[in-house]
Length: 201
Image 1 (cartoon, one colour):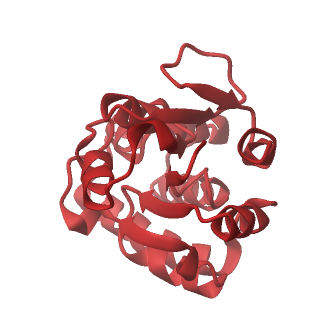
Image 2 (cartoon, one colour):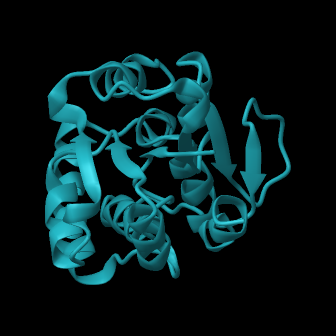
């Protein structure tokens, strides 16, 4: 039985990718560059770092991008449908919840705005200084700190780097993806809305 849940944030708990992609495309267009939105979305689904490197953007561009998206996402980004209810049911059953994300502290404002902060015992963000996923350092830290039994713990994310981090830490994993691909994940679902079927049955 699963008792401990380690979540990714973007694309897993919150539907933030539309904002991430829109802001990135808009800033590129301001520089006179024409890009396909679908290409940016596919790269963002891998990682922001991959997106930056593919388009060769400057440090100034990245800083501006992060500032712009932080302002817009506070207004537009919301939890995926069903996530709030899923967290509540699991918490009622005695589950613990934690987040490992590459984003900065802006996550706390989003969680607070949607009154979800109380569900999470630990939220590890970029400033905490852990190695980036797929390195298992942050996941292993949580498992050890909270004395989680590995067979009762799962890492849930929408990118292979998320499930690789969990896999390398020796816990169960779930990949959220509607693209058929090879994965080390223990489980796969096609959307965050399908997590309920996996975790509550």
